[in-house]
Image 1 (tube, rainbow, N blue to C red):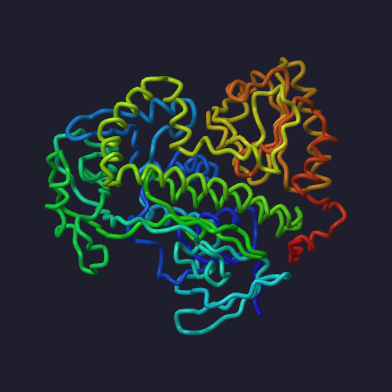
Image 2 (cartoon, rainbow, N blue to C red):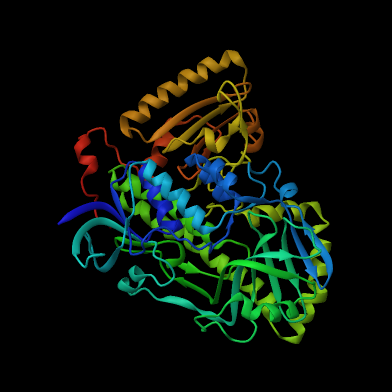
Length: 551
């Protein structure tokens, strides 16, 4: 029987992202999918700033932005009147290198991730699906079926189901997918739009009967159009956009013409989530674990970030560098976010689709006025972008987050804030996410003093680097930062006073924060809280053996 450390089932955006993360960390894995290749339909559309920051650490953010279309503003129309314009670029300026929503459809995201995976020397086994699995204490045995009908038995230490809302992995594990299905049927169309409104910006149109979303896509006057399906033709297999065009125009208060439809689909929207993201040796990620309404363009991004959260933890455990209990933090950190996302998108979704007279009155008359009043306040505007862009996600309540000093503004569990790194630390100016791109943890020793003390700090960092490498080889990168070294913006973004010690996780969240240079305290955290195991006395060959089972 063949063996691999990790089997990834499903090669959509989530599975491909997880494969790329495992490849970066040098983990042995296989990724399979019964499809013939990457998705060709556009499907999910928006890429948020937080995802682009993770792409930047992978070296693919520039390619993503070049292929997509940045959207710098969104508009809310009630009838023919624009009641609110949200300038995303202005709101997010200084918070991220990517203060916009990037329109880059799922097919292009998958192609980009697939190319990245191939460049790393790995590839998806297309036309190969999961037939059955046995989830046991010592490992997982999976039966795979190839295109020619041949069955293959494969043993693996860990299995991750990234196989979508109808997940065979989830069904094999018998994990309930609780929630429901909205009454309304919806349509999505990639089409050309002719109207009197400005082009190139996200537009939400609320009318007495329904709502319609317009997402600008690459190409002249091309949009992704989403709305409630007139009638109930969601189950009609040959339904075309041309069949409902006239009814869609009648629903809207704004004159509009559609042409050259490239893709159309009608569907029902589900809101569901599993109770656990982990079942023994198996995990669920992306749509296999949670599905929700398309409001806010959050779904694909949430799956991609599931993969980044789980990837580095699997890498540490499979390579014998951390105890298996570390993997419990995947559910503990990601499940609450999925629940919160379900609640917020469900509330927003019901607001825009409800036919109740009171809710409809609130939607058309109260909500626009309230939104305008709130958006006139700078504090509200500045808080909105982190919510929409997912840059505000944090893990402060995680057992992995340790703030050893309350005197610092930075908090463990927060995303590493954006700052530009300059010379001499970086040959050319770059974001902190690109500068800390090397896989593994990054330990920042930050001290405000001048050049004379820089040598002493560099010497201290070298000593710590040697000490930490002797216990946890190839796991931690140590950096000495002083004012004038190219990291002044990072000092300001983190609110560092005299000094700070910050441990940055591989997914670029702060794990440990202190205002003391206390190596012993840091080592206690690494061993007891993070669960890193001393491998100084472990043979290198032992690092690639099967990891210990969950306890």
